[in-house]
Each structure stands twice: as C-alpha cells, then as structure tokens.
Image (cartoon, rainbow, N blue to C red; front, top):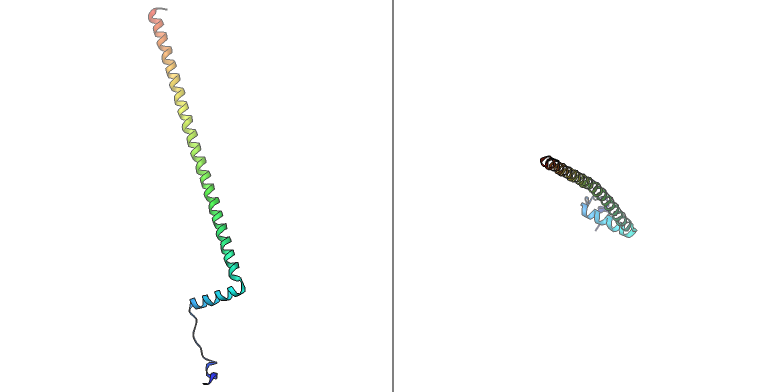
Length: 105
C-alpha cells in the first residue's frame, strides 16, 4: 500500500461532540478542567449569594411596609377608642346634668 496517497486526503470535519470530547481530554491532561470547574462553582456561589442578598433586601422592605401598616392600624384603633371614651364621657355628663335639672338642683 502506498501511504503517499493519504497525505493530501481530507477526512472531513469532526462533529461537535467528538471535537468537544477531544478538547475535554486535552484540558484534563493540562489541568484546565479543574480550573474551569472551580471558576464555574465560584460563579454559581457568587450568583447564589447575590440572589440571597436581593431576596433578603426584598423581605426587609416588605416587612417594613407591613410594620408601617400595622402601626397605622393600631393608631387608628387607638384614636377610635379615645373618641368612644370621650363620647361616653360626654354622654354621662349630659345625663348627669339632665338628672340634676330634673331634680331641680
């Protein structure tokens, strides 16, 4: 067999998976895979930490809003109670004056 015939032969392109597998093997040999994995894990941790911080901030804001609503509701209730007490006091005062007037005092 004459091997000179194969020198200029085009055997075609590798498909993507074969090429990726070959690149992965090369990276494993050179130790790049570990670095890529570490970088990927670090990126995931940073992303997760950022998401957690955003969630904490949203919860804090929501809690503040709820707390303000509770305080406003309590203030309204206190005011309504004060008004009821004042009305009851005024009513008692009127009744007392009416009794005194009826007795002729």
